[in-house]
Length: 212
Ligand SMILES: [Fe+2]
Image (cartoon, rainbow, N blue to C red; front, side, top):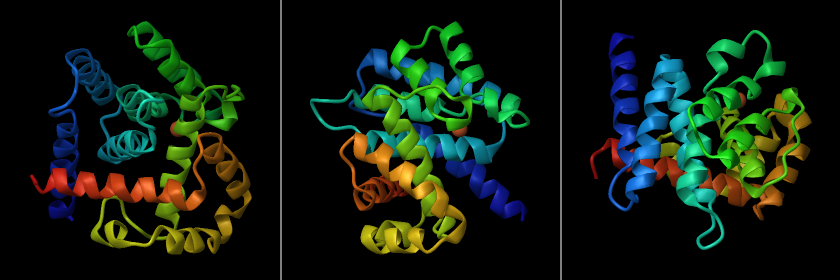
């Protein structure tokens, strides 16, 4: 068990290396600020792993010349920043996080996407970024519900269409499939394509963790 916890910590430590070459200075400093804020609010490795995963998925979902991949990654990274405070009252989830990010001076589009990412807060999703955070977050959990870990070799080599069939066979997830499909379609992604973005993100994080 100790070895497993240690590996999880090492993996989480390696993931921020995604803020690597190719980032503009402003984006790099926003990412560093976001990571510091997130670690201060979310000390638990399981939350950090999910946050870094959704960041990577968002970057895969961003469309070149239409979306700002750095901004999309930031929104994914920060979307659950308040979960330590709101887990016992999820009607405040996202709303508290948005206020934290507003106070820290993060971009208004990122603040709104975090505000609107959880249906229980009742905040309308209006932008591509808003829909993308919902889509990326939920598709992550749908894939996890099939038993595929993120990142993992199994996910890295899975066929998205097959994973989508497996998702649809998970009885407990059936009630949310319509809404998730609708939100992903808002950014032009069918469910197999959204799952393909999860797979690509998993592959990249696996490579980063392996130092490739
Ligand atoms: Fe959330």
